[in-house]
Length: 303
Image (cartoon, rainbow, N blue to C red; front, side, top):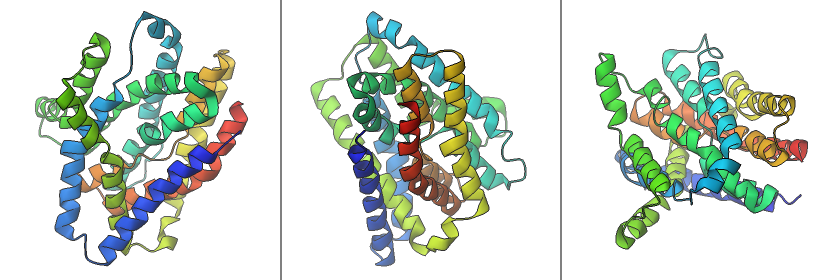
């Protein structure tokens, strides 16, 4: 089994993050620059990345072949959402929001497709693309409600449904199901802006970590979260798939993608909505570091 692709992707993410850290220490990235990076990601590159992620062919054959992976992925999201209210009872309110969001939203959107393709081939890539649909919807609907506060439910619903990322999910679903393509100029614009999303997100996380000691990354809370995200959830999914005799490749993709580290956007949203961005960045970095061991272990387990 070749893990070269996995290590290259993780190495790329850490390289950009270290660049962000160095730029902040040198004063190139200032406090105002961090706010600008956050807004650029939330309002521009992330919505474009979401629309871009839905650009997969969708026909009846795929609908039949991928129904199981869709059901499994939906079950994972619902289960993770329920767990997020159970697993962190004694956390402070701001940290609890970060941990809840990071429990339902992994970095599968960045790491998932290339890893699934390198381990399981073209079929793995197809299944991974379908698997990510429920997560993309959850992270910008139920997930956003962790951070978004409003005086009443009507205002909250309006705030969430008019969020740029939710609008992007809606547009992406329409384009995928209808088979309609954006005009060439619009498609290239979206593609170009989407390609900047990962770089801007990791630069931002690196800039946050400029004032954080490496030792402080490792504490009981970040290790507890990493254990849940990287081991508990994927092992639970593995046992479920075995119990219901789910097809092996579907099982493999579901387990590996369920064991991805915290989504980098967790730190972006924590900063945007004043919910302890430093702690969120620690969760992202510590879980990503540990995933360099746990993801290969999960791949070996399901092969």
